[in-house]
Amino acid sequence: MPFQSDLLAGRSVLVTGGGTGICRGIALELARHGCDVAVTSRSSEHLDPTAEEIRALGRRAVSVEADVRDAEAVAFAVERTVGEFGGLDILVNGAAGNFLCLAEDLSPNGFGAVVDIDLKGTFHGCKAALPHLKQRGGVVLNISATLHYLGTLAQLHVASAKAGVDALTRVLAVEWGPYGIRVNGIAPGPIADTEGVRRLLDDAAKQRAEKATPLQRLGLIEDVSNAALFLCSRAASYITGATLVVDGGLWLASNREAFSIEPGPGQ
Image (cartoon, rainbow, N blue to C red; front, side, top):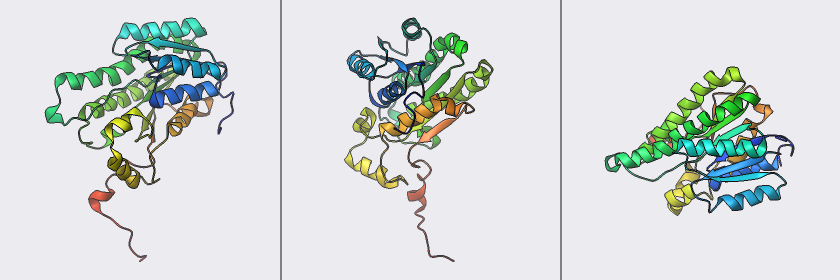
């Protein structure tokens, strides 16, 4: 464990999309370091097992079935969290949607669905949590991506939504800084053992991603959850408006094959 176990002792967090994948990992990691944790998802299937794991770590847990596209449902989840824990210190906006589709085949509904979940859902969470975060000088952590840094094929909808999330992160960092609220993001690369990688990348694509990544592997959920723990802690107390890329250097090296540059002999 690279951080002290009481790093976030006495604090509470709401994690949207916290029943599975990266956000489940973040929820559990924050619980391991002292947080009481509320998790939300559109489906209750994964919420209760995650809540039980949090309680097994000795922390209080709340599970709320909520669709982040519904502002009232998100507001209810926030109020339920505050009611159970007595306040809210940290908000993690992680609910997301994704599928592969070329722009010319993408329907308005398909585009809108991802924007509604990823971008509007993040806004709904921030808006509902603000009154409570203002009371404690809290933290917002938005889960983004690197897809919009380049022209990622078949990802127009997600790239557009995540670009919006990054803009939201920067603007809220400026507007909410005077309240003592820090707003940051994390942009993960391909993370092994997540639904997104299982659904979107076949074995050959995984091997190509590993080869293209300077660190020569896919990411792990713990790589992202450790970054989240840092950004949510007082160790990051002077960091706001930043989006931390956790991708092993993949997007930085993405032009390597296009230019086919190989190191030559010393001059």
